[in-house]
Structures are given as structure tokens and as C-alpha cells.
Amino acid sequence: MRRFVLFPFLLSAATACGGEPESDLLIEAQATSIESCTAAPQTLRGELFGALHGALSARAEPSICAGSRRPKGGVRLRYRSEANESLPETLIILGIDSVEPGKTATALRTTVTMIDETNQRFFSTADQAHCFADITDHDVLHENVRSVVTGVLWCTAAIAAVSGEGSIRIRDLEFQSVIDWKGS
Image (cartoon, rainbow, N blue to C red; front, side, top):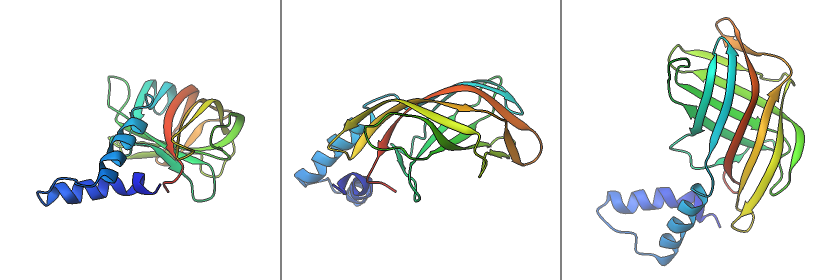
């Protein structure tokens, strides 16, 4: 089942050399990988207040098809918002503790990192335990290799600036993402 992780490398190596993927296994991996990535919209939506303020509408990073397991447990979800009239381009990373394939849960401790790439500002909850995620729906795909997780992120305090001044407050951010349980 490691073929999901190796597929992009193998396909790019084959096509970069002018070749075509010949293996049925590689073609099957391509179809399964694409199906998994498009199984659900990978979005993060809500409203930010403070140093970054306005309506947030972010999508999973284009180069990263799915969220992945964190080294110490849980999952990591990555989103990127495009600049709009009220918000600069922002990278958002959610590190949600204790997520298990196919299970819903409430009040899971979540590390939130937001990077304002336009103005080079970095905000994070780091080791502070004041952001949490409720997993409201969790559908398993492909024999526990991937799943689609849906939920709400909420914080009881502001997310402080690590570089610079200020903080960000959030109002319930709704998220959905594909998780690759075999990835790292």
C-alpha cells in the first residue's frame, strides 16, 4: 500500500525521461491517488479577527494532496488562502491530536500555526492548549489508507504572534480534508 506515497515520484521520473508509465500497478495507483485527492473538497472556512482579519477561505496546498500523520500522533492538515481584499496570502497548519481513522471526537487539542507570507508574520499556539477541534464526520476510504475528515476548529484564547506583534482570534473555522494514514 506504500504505492500512494511513491506514485508522484515514480510518475515524474518516468515522464521526465520521456517515458510513459508502463506498469498496471502504477496506472492503478494513479487512478486511486486521484480518486482519493478529489474525494472531498479540502477546505478551511471561517472568520479571523485581530492582526489578520476578514473572511478566510483556504484550500489544501496544491502540492500536498492530503493531510498526514504527525510524528507524535494525530494528524497535520495544511491549507493556503489566496490574498483577497482583507487578508494576505496565508499558510494555515492544524496539528490535531488523537485523531483515529473513521472516528469522530470532540475537543481534540489542536496546534494552530498561521503564516502571513506577504508580510512575513508568524502566529502559533505552540504548546498552549487553547485551540481544539471537533471531528464531526470521518469517512474511511481505501481500506484505512485514506479518510475524509470534517470538523470545526475553535479557540478559547487568541493565537499569539511569534514574530512581530499582535494576535489572531478565530470564530469557528470549518474544515474538511483527506488524510493519508500511511504518509508521514
